[in-house]
Amino acid sequence: MECTVRWTGQDAGMSFVAETGSGHAFVMDGAPDAGGRNLGPRPMEMVLAGTGGCTAFDIVLILKKGRHAVSGCEVSLKADRAESDPKVFTHIHFHYRVKGKNLKPEVVARAIELSKDKYCSASIMIAKTATITHDYEIIEEV
Image (cartoon, rainbow, N blue to C red; front, side, top):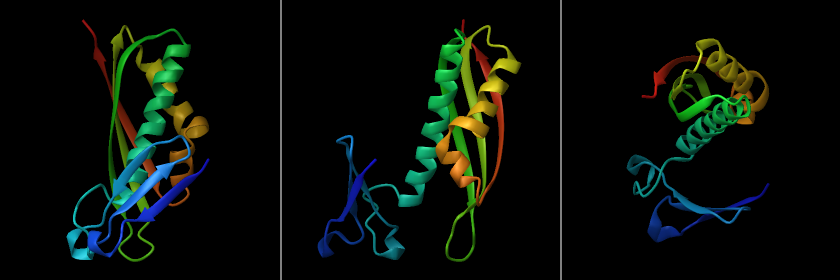
């Protein structure tokens, strides 16, 4: 896996363009009080979003492989960070909303546990510094 991150220059404040090995690009920026212009998400927001994407991907894949009728998956993450540098994540709460037909609570709970303990590289890595908690709700599709 590769990625190149390039500062866009003095005139852009604290904006950076990241180009991934898979050919995608996105802008990150700092807060105005740190010299940024709020042109994109903060780098740590990207870490949090990537973690949410990683676990949501797992949940959908696990449920589909189990031939469960999943039609939606959303995860909201709320994170706390350390007060001093390095301002690592210290606690993250994941709230999953899984939508489908006849999804059993134990099946959804098992998918979340598998993601948390075995498959989600991002959350497993972040768990080295942060306490991770989660809950979930199942939304019955009509």
